[in-house]
Image 1 (cartoon, helix red, strand yellow):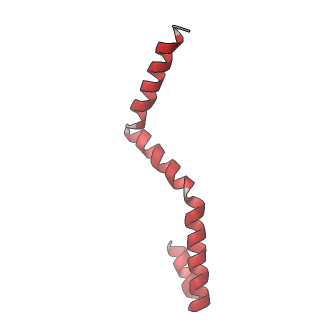
Image 2 (cartoon, helix red, strand yellow):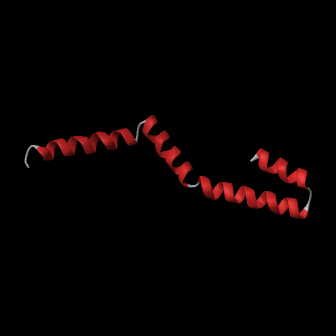
Image 3 (cartoon, one colour):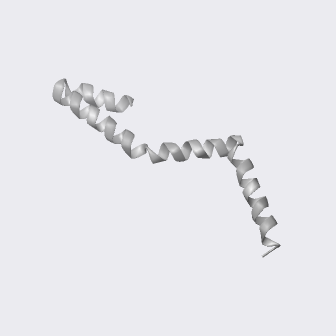
Length: 67
C-alpha cells in the first residue's frame, strides 16, 4: 500500500497541472459546450418554429441557418 500512495499523488498532481494548461482549458470548454448542445438546439428550433408561426417560413429558416 505504501508505494502506491506517492504514485497516486503524482498522478493527481499531473492531472491538476494539465487542467490549467491551454489544452486542458480547451478540453474543459469543449466538454461544457457538449453538455448544453441539446438545450441550445431545442431553443433554436423552438425559436424558428415561433417565427414560422408568427411571421414567415423563409424568415424562420434564415434564423435557424444563422444560429
